[in-house]
Structure formats: C-alpha cells, structure tokens
Length: 382
Image 1 (cartoon, rainbow, N blue to C red):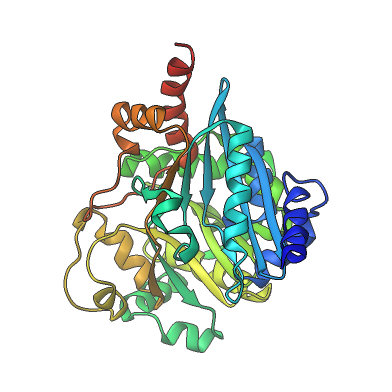
Image 2: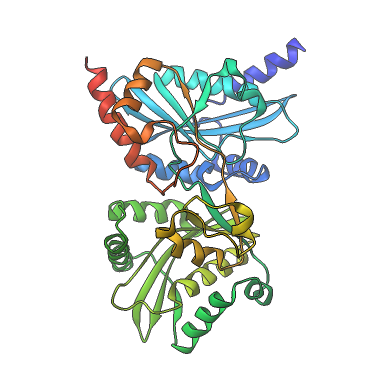
C-alpha cells in the first residue's frame, strides 16, 4: 500500500506545470473523461495570451486518474487561482484526494490567496469534507446554465426544434440568407468585431478588445470556425464556434442592428451544429442562459415563466432548438489566506458568496478577477 502511494506521489511530482505533458496527451485524456473545453490545452494557451499563468496537474496511480488546469492571475507576490469547469476525475477512481493535495501544493507555491472552483460536475465527495475548507463561492463567472443540443441527422435535428424555430429557419431560407465560413483575415476580424460591438451596445454588455477574439481563433486553429450570415452579399450576423472532444460550442456572436433579419441567428447556429457534427461531435452547447425557473419546465418546453424575464428572449431562442437545459454546480472557493480573502469579498461585492436564489448573468472571468486583484495589489503593498 505504501509503495503504491509513493508511486502515485511520484506522478504528482512530475505533474506540475506543463513539462512532460504534451498537448495531445492532455487533451486525449481529458476528452476520454468527458472534460470541458475550458480545461483543454488550447484554452490554457489562449488564456496565457491574456495574461494568465497556467499550471496543469494530473494524478495517475492505483487509485485512478484525475486532472486539473489552473489559471493563475498574479498581483505582486500574491495571486488568485481559478479552476474553470474542473476538476476532471475518473468515475471509478479515488485519485481526487491526491489531486487536491497537488492543487494545494501548487497554490502554496504561487502564494495564492484563494482558489475559485467552477465545477463541470459535482465536486468529488472527498473534497467536500469539513476538513477541506471548501465554502460557497461567488456567483458563476461562466454561465450557470446552458442549453445542449444532441447533434442528430438533419431531419431529426429539425424535428426536435420548436415550431417557431423551424419557422424562423424557413423564413431565412426564403429571404436567401446564406452562411459562409470565413478565412481569418484582418478584414473578417474587423467585420466580426463591428458586429460584436453593435450587439454589446444594443444589449448593454461588455466585450473584450479585438485581439482577444483573434487570439482565440489563432490558438484553436481548425478546432474553431468564424461564420457570417449574409443576404444579397450584406453581412447580417457573425459567430465563432469551437469544438473539443465530442462537443461543439457557440463561443461569441454578434449581429447587425440595421441588416439583421428574422432567422439569421438560427441559421448560423444550425450551420455551426452541422460543422461540429462533421468533425465527430455528438452534442452542441448553445451557450449560457440566465438562471431561474425549474429545469423540468424549461426542458419540457412549456410551463412556468422563469425568473429573469428581461433575458427571456435569449432563453427561448436557445431552448427552441430542442436541447436540454443543463445547470452546473455552484462555484466553490478554498481560502488559503482568510483575512485577505475576506478583504476581497468586503470591497468587491462580486466576490461575495452567491445568494441561495439569484439571477446569474454571464461575466468575463478575467475582467472580474482583475478587479479583485486591484485590491490585492493595494493590500500587498501595506
């Protein structure tokens, strides 16, 4: 037993950082365990371009297999650590305990104030004991709920949609809406970013700088696509989709205020689903919707009007494709420096524990964590 344990710890010693863990090995193992795109190697490299440091950990041994990609944001001698849509643990293993030890060691090396964990699935039971110190974290940085659509053949894909979604697709077809996959040129990125800016102004949300989306497409390569819908040669909407493992995903989208027409957005999503299906994906994530309302009512297509009526249009549009509404587990946090973690929560309400019932909006984790790190810089200088 002791020998097995030593072998497992030896794997831990070699697991920190990216050394010895090639992209293909990491992503194949992650995909095999049903891991999320936000734990993929490409996502880590993309976030590295946005100023994050990346630490990848994996545990292999007689107690199973587990892995986690940590995003580290530094402020002076201290940092915040973020684990998006992780950890990823083999169902029949108990390696989660060893993985948590490795995470603690990595956080100690980075002098982390707090670890934010936004799980893909419920956290391992061995993590949730009182001795491990996990507590309720802030509201989700990513979307707390999303819509996932099974990628059937076209006839069945259309049949599972709501009538109004099919009607929108037919309307777009009659108007001559077409979808083109675009090369990643400066002109194409300029067009996409203008669409994104228009959508942000129209709906009152924030976006990143243009280089953010260029970096994403550059890092993901043929695992992502940029698409535009057009009518009579005029661009009406744009979408960036990506894929990992057996799942495709709508990542970023925008539309023209002046030229968008009924059905443009639906046609783009349908084409993105076909693209993902052609690359071996079995389901497509349409992206976040606001929380509120029982899952049974949402997945049943009818019933009680959920909370967050101001975002009802987005919800209805995405659920209209016939997918299932998926709710992710709540964000948890692990405080390594409780006093400083308290100061972050005290001066940045966004980092206070989420209420039991709340409307969760989609935020950019990098921007939010930067806000908290401003406070950390001040505190670290005292």
